[in-house]
Image: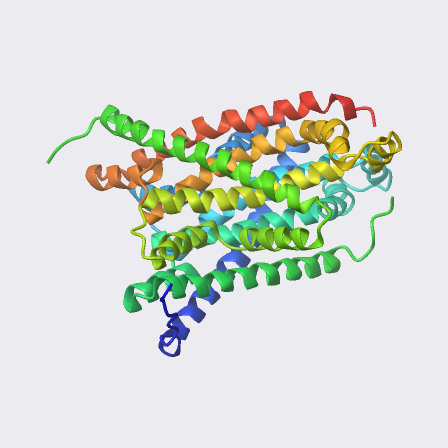
Length: 223
Length: 219
């Protein structure tokens, strides 16, 4: 192989990559916060909420989990404007990520809630807590603690999956890579570099989530 | 201007969906075979093999599938081959699938209780016999539901190959949209076709889990 790697373009293009990195991190942060919130709402509905609300939530979860993220993104960005819903690339990307993570994390969190022993609900009630207080203090936090590793992996998967938003021209890391390769024709180098960035980002995100877990659940679960 | 009926759109999408199915099958079977080879290294006794597979898994699970597709597409080109999209797509998906399957299967092998190893060793069985008669039959039972479940991820993963130019269901969706200017209908139909492919797999994974888990229900 006589190919010579050429990274001389970095001096000129590093701001593009940096901007992409910032966008990917922003997308992940916002998507995770709202996605997990939506997931908690779904999990509550499916395990404790009103019966009539359950079928629509099941339909939502099944539909999202059985279709590709790319198609969800295209449907939101290209399809919804024909219903009069207009949004920017960034907004569409965030919305798609929230909807996607909401469905997955809902299933994960539900498993955590359903593993709660019945006695916990009764203990909460005996302390004169309302149903909401019991859910908030007694059920949800231990449930999240139980499924935190699974939820963390799903968040990392969603972060990696966000590379697809470059296809609607949201300016993330992959968009930067596409941009650079179209200007410099150094396709392999630019994708190689950005793949490395994603790998570092995934490792950092995993560590960060472990830290968040330690912060949210300072006490070990009593067994 | 030409007008397109719903049937025109659906027919074209369904024709393209054949390629989604074919690519999914190739990736799943190829990834499964490679995954088995990696599993052999991962649960084997050689330290170097274990570290290699750990690194492999970390690399492929820690980077986006889209990037792997790009690297396969442009990386193979470095060797001076004219790379067709299907080759890069198949290669990247096989490598990616193997990385996930080997982790799923490793968990299943490790879920077999330690006492089973000790009991079979006390019967004078060697490593191969232990695997063949005691460990694998139990591990396979545990492995079937998550493996079927993962096949859904493979089908959905094939959607990304449209980005490097492989014409399957997603790409057909884009092409048909550009001709009909009806993104809402077209992408809605594309989503429904994916759902029709994936949902039976998800459901059967759940049912299998319930059926095959009978032995462990009372523990």
